[in-house]
Length: 231
Image 1 (spheres, rainbow, N blue to C red):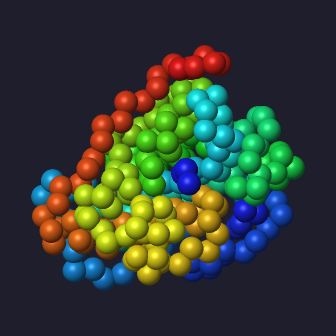
Image 2 (cartoon, rainbow, N blue to C red; image 1 turned 45 degrees about the vertical axis):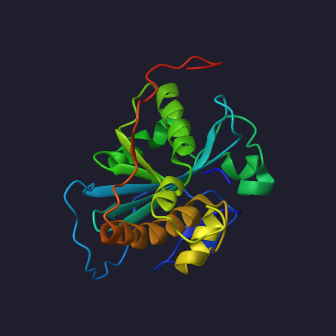
Image 3 (cartoon, helix red, strand yellow; image 1 turned 120 degrees about the horizontal axis):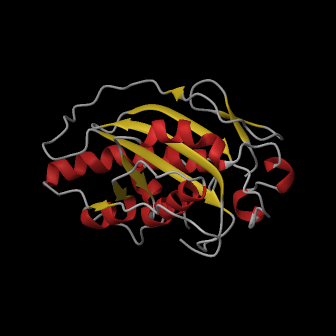
């Protein structure tokens, strides 16, 4: 996502700080809640709320962490998953994402997480804040690994907020979080940013239904080949 230290998942929705990278692993179920929202005709049946942290903003930059919350068509979270990623290069702005080269040394490389990540993205709409950025970074990583990203549509929470005409001064993540009463624990940590987006998505979907607003879904065209220096 455009706009800290490592965390490990513990019970519930709390994270414990740790010094070592968290290995890629099974997703943590999220307790379901009751919701009056039914999935309107034409709305997606499921979402993958995603955040990536990267070594920079250029096409040659690499992903250093990925988080995914799987969410059903009503906006209810089903589970979540997080992993640091060894970028095989300098980690870039450590002052932003908090992941040092030492912390990432033992982390899996992107080809090692492709299978599990794909399972979480397949047949879902990718949701992210400034979704084009997260989508492009993931698509390039897939291409580098010799795979095709299994995503066909994306939903940007910035674009959605604009469609909903929210009474906010800007569309930064912290502003939207404050509007919806969502607490940010660790800005620019992929897992916490994805959690915040998930908690924002549900009331946003409910407002879209009430107002009869069509979701601003965008087609995703994955990078299929990669050579160093460009797609």
